[in-house]
Length: 539
Picture (cartoon, rainbow, N blue to C red):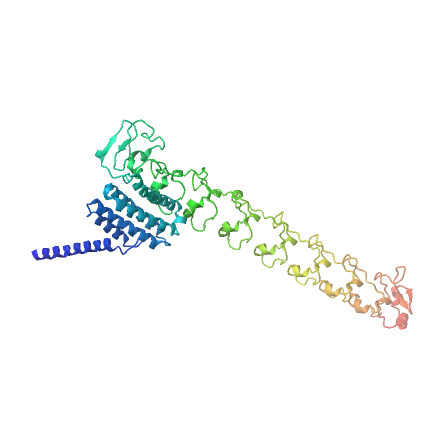
């Protein structure tokens, strides 16, 4: 057990020594730069190493070494995304170095001042080479540039004014005195002189210290050792505390001195013009890319009413294309919808003539393939359809499928009126002489096989009168009409074309001999004498 403890102690000591050696190596050689994964460890080692210097001059020189490193880091990181973090570490090192130098007496600090001035000038040169910070973090860039300019000016005037270096040294609580007005007064080697109690300076009348500002000590803001030219803009103090990315405007537009979290942006200010400058990163995917104010109000995000007029929104598809159903009209939404409600749909057909481009999918199967406007109007419903037949002569191309079996194969217009119903049909027989071609199927059994017009008129089937002109072969038609034991000769030998019972012009029954009608009684016809004359007449 004892041997184990000895070995463990040796191993632990070796690890500690190794870590300490590694830390010292990191602090001395500084191989990493801001933004690197191991730079934080290197910075920690550098800070710890500064604690071994107790002499103010040695410590100041070491901290100036760190400033020089950070200036080199800034130059190395120039033109990369690590510019801002390099600037933050440089700012930290300058603050540490100036505080350390302020603790060195005037007689021993000349070389330190000269070196600090040289580093300030080098820093200013490095700032001119930056590419990203001046555009993406403009306020931070200007604030830091002003700080370096002020530092250069202060260090340059030290010898000329014979003043001590104007940087506030750290003071303990025992060095603070509280005047009657309750304002802390700090005495420091830098020469800050307290204001008389009750004066405007003592009560800080020119910049009210309220909220968190009331808890600050004088040195927190007047670290240059003087009151004059102290920045009174929030950004000069809080620059490096801004999250990234952050609104680039003035802090007081959102924050109050009470607390950072008590933030409320005054959108009525003149600065609130470009909503996207702050809120673009809050947008969900595929969000409207215009100004937030076109839809939202400053009170709450979920109070959304898009003002199409304010936004100048004329390209509806740019926003609403993703909410259209399949096979939807591809044109602008405003042609059908208004900006109040989607379901209130009225399409303005003005200027549109190609109905099929939109309504082809709405047509039932075997529907008329022409333009919808030939049947439908844009003011009524689909069911109120009336086809405009003007200019259309080929009826069959549309109506062939509606004809019953064995229907007339010609044009519908020969029978039907496009302004009336199907049932009110009347055929225009003008120019037609072949009745059988159409009406052959209408004839009863054993009907006359000649043309219908020989018996019927085009007005009605009933009231048929056969025109016997030029017809002499009566038997060919009337053979089946005669009774049994009837004369087998031509009907015209006994009958005329008006009635079967009439032979003569006076309606009497008779017999025609050599073209002359003879009115006689039945016995006259059926006597042996007439039989002998005429022949063939049976008794």
